[in-house]
Length: 350
Image 1 (cartoon, rainbow, N blue to C red):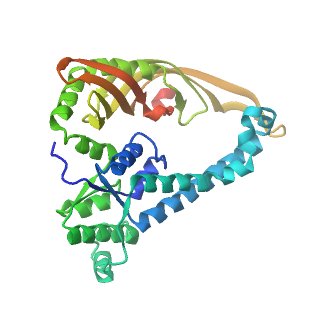
Image 2 (cartoon, rainbow, N blue to C red):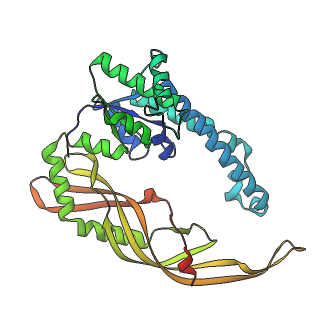
Image 3 (tube, rainbow, N blue to C red):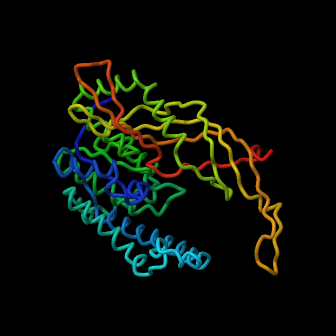
């Protein structure tokens, strides 16, 4: 693993969208803390700011549409006080402004610095467009916002004799950075945080080695939490119960996203193979009364399935830097505490 090349970081809008605009979670929250304490320098552009706010508006409209559908089909819920918030128009109308305010607070609290885009050369922009230079490509010709961002960041790096990490899920941005000595692209915040924490090389390596040595203990904690986790069916209306884990495989390296004197937070992904008992309503073989507008007989199906899922894991551990034979797991969070969705495939129905 190569060390940290610069403490400058630019986070593309695709990452904020992937994090579901949760600006205080364990990744963006850590970025904010590190930036506020001048351990790193977070950069942004007006383009990313506008993209995020537009996406917040789009997601809010989608959410309001889903709530409106629930209100119409779930009128009976009006009789239950705990569901009052669903029927409160004022609350749903405030969602967009509330999330935008959280974003603005994140930028302010982080002390994020704005890279100006006004000085970007139009000639260079058009050259990239016509010659299909990344982030332009034949499949994505209208990538002017990304192109302006990258040219602005590159210009800033040249002017200030600096380098910049660019965190993005966009392959065209990755391609742009490949041959650029100033810009270094990463596909996740945890990869960047792992590099930041590697500056304390001895402690970082100590925790990584300790985690690998005691991974069986971590695996036991994952299995225990997995079997009690919440599950949902992706393509059927039903339930998932009686989980039995068959195997846990580490998919990639363990990233250390937070490192203190005697505590660390680890982030990684595992592929879990497991058995489960599934029950769902088979609407194709149920009886529907068109006059009544409802099913008069619903066929219930129960089956046992074996499948696997890729699960993000956050593990908090405590350690003693003088003792390489002890690692205590203090918490284990799977899938960011959200339900794990499993999909039934054709073979599962027989």
